[in-house]
Length: 310
Image (cartoon, rainbow, N blue to C red):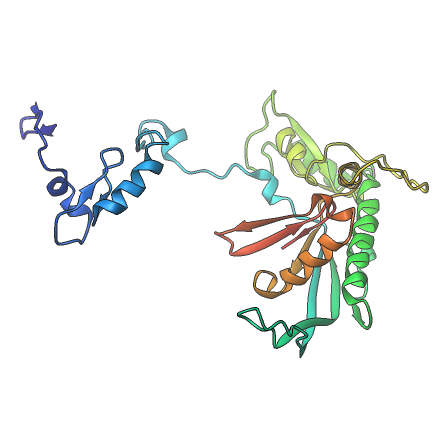
């Protein structure tokens, strides 16, 4: 269908799809066009191979936002949880050296001449709380990867214990109380306080210090990532639980520990190979080990029940 200058519309019979789709390719000769998605191909064999996959999906439909609706045509930031500053994260770096390979199989087309072996690592706990800041750990010796794994799990348990001790808010000073009573908008999102989203006192759950007046929505959003269960405050289990399988162990670890990022230098291109191996070898800890690749950030994440490697 074509539109005329006077807004009249006419249907036109298309006899040659190759000519119709001419502007969609740099191919100078006849093209073979898919009737389903209108994509041109340079030869018929490629089109035949494409059709078997293309017909599985619905036809292409491009939808544009409504310019009259501000909620559709205006891009806004809504992920308030991303504004929450994580109170703890770990920074690691591996050091390795090359050793002669032991692969002597003549049948293989590729022979291993050298092998990368980790000889040591360094870890630095980063925290916004000076009282919980520790000295960097540097280790070089036997069983480097086992030492690394034990240290990560230990740090996760220690930090989870700190975050689980949810402290009540300390009494406000006269200045803080006046600032709270006079506030009319949320410091975090800038929205005005209303009856359905009233003002609350937002405070640090680690120190108990009052921070600023916030709306109820932001106050509930700015917190550690949710877990399936809430850790009992100050409760420490000394008895080792018995699990029937790896999944039960992973579930228990997930519900008792908070989200802890572990940042590596050059994780995707190098260190991830060592991390994934040690996670898979530590049974039953490997039950919930997964790898996720994010193209936009160009990073690889290896995840176990308690920590996420970035």
